[in-house]
Image (cartoon, rainbow, N blue to C red; front, top):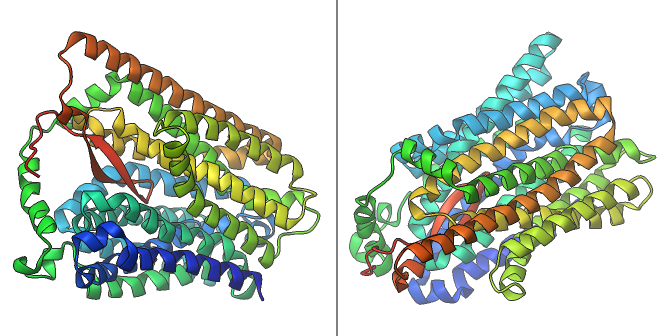
Length: 507
């Protein structure tokens, strides 16, 4: 059987298991909601999951074609491709605070439709540009502009997914659902990295943009037909589950609590050494993650004796995708079961293991079999994406609730700034100094990520001890944790945030 078919079926099996578990097997879901309600919300999140996988296909399609054979056919250099990738990341970083606010204003479903239609039109425009025989200079300029606009428009979808799913799932359900939904998101890696080579070979470069563009237009229609921003939009109040109805009514009370202004949030964040440590860790982790993800196919294609085939890229792309499935769940489970919910130690250890695996990949890629290369790619994905999940989980647990939201927004922007910077630098580094400097930057960034997490944790513990000595003992309420949904780097990530000591206990 064809390699791509086997891997596609394996990914489909992961997704199907997640769907069945959420609708029929989840103990929490069965206890809280009727079967009718569970099936109705499947109609809500499943189309959004497919759309978000298409977002990934429309975002990493450039990385799929970032190999020497394709670049030479197009007349693009490594430096230029690096700037294209940077433009997308920086557009996302700059726009992320505004897209979130606009989505809050227009509603989750409308935000998702804007994201799908906007990204679709940008990708279809790129497809038309590469099908036409226009000026080479004009193509260079339009490629950067439309790719940046494409990634920017996807930011509306990030905020919309979090907003809608949080309305349909109670806090106690969101942790497991986040893992299920992330499986669907991560499958988008395979749609771009695993199938991109086949699309380019059989149809041409333009179709790595036309296909996801068409898929996103189709999903915008499906979302318009099936997705509702809240359960109240499709069910009468007397038919809503009691907890969901209460959640909707109590949300207004929570908004009345004192909220810091953006300026006050920024001042508090910049005074927090814990936050600055985690911010630095995220910067280096994003450098390592996207510096590897956007250039590993180019590296493999250049150092191996024969160019990568469609079967090779299917194995490598599938390995990265399934590694993301496993990493997000396995690393969290290890931190709970082995390290007793201490997130810092596993992040530090995984960062070192991540550096080791990246080093091994560099030294053996030229001579090892594609199966071994796939296994190493799988391990790198487990550590890199698992590490990312843990880091995004850790931040709000060590920061006061009143600045946690602001911290997430800033880290979102810094993460994408790092991604853009790595793309711009890597293109120049690979041309000027070769892949050794490239991989060394990834290894050093991995180690620094772990070191800064450790440093941020140190300041958190110091601050906690200092406050404990200067204030009264904390109450039980202050030690409780509430689950909140946050959007981080385009992924649906569930995180625990400290509940205020004076929070209402009537919920």
